[in-house]
Image (cartoon, rainbow, N blue to C red; front, side, top):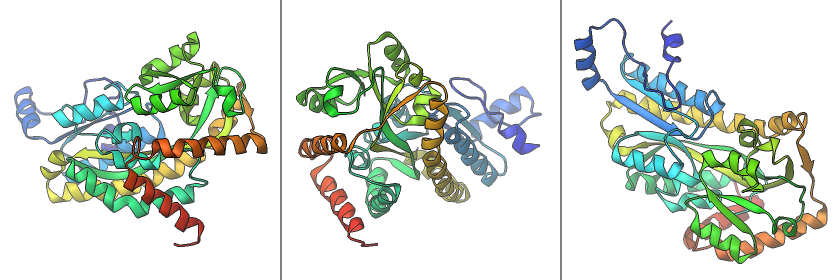
Length: 346
């Protein structure tokens, strides 16, 4: 009964919370002042695997406190874009979030190396290898900035969803690309290479695609399906541009104020949640493509020559990305780990 009631938490923008029942109004007010509270924000869709795993993390945290505590998850970007959510965490309006690199690099830019190097990673095994080699240093950087990393995850490969078919880099130059509003450096690089970035927030993507304000959306298949972007941008280039890497983070202040059992519960279950999210998200890439294909998505498969042109574009991008989007020393470290993996160093 407890678990069933605990899962009836409020979602996107609602004001309810997990709490204790049967107290008088005066006792409730007094208890609310003493009871620990965690509010997490994310762009993930309500009831998605990511959302459900956050709820599971909250349940385990409450169990470590003997059923005390309030845990609220705000989904679907109801707390703003990821940059805004990081700001809210810093001032205490939120205590944590499930964020992609877009938000994480607002905390420390080193994490951008895991997502901002197009066509670098050839498999999830390479992504895992590099992340584990860099994990200690990245988590130390985050801790120094006031954030505790509870789990690392990912959300699939970025692919290009467009309103018209395109398979070569040149095909996309006449199209208008969605980009995150807080990525001026990336927008500058795109313009230098002849592409047309349109900076927006998440909530603006679908109407922008529907009206033609944007004609290409780099997104994971699951995100394209969940947001119905594919209904208008109904051509997907089957090219794994980059992995979407993310993490569950909590403010260090909130973490330090918890009793040791609660800290341990968050760390232990955070690690498990990260594994579940990674496993499920990777499976959802193919599942989402199959589901969308049945509903009108057209999959564009690049030829061998097309792939050579994409690889050539990536090589042009790397010198621009190094130092500008990714710190030079971190860029070099990622490249060395990838090289070691391909050389068979484990």
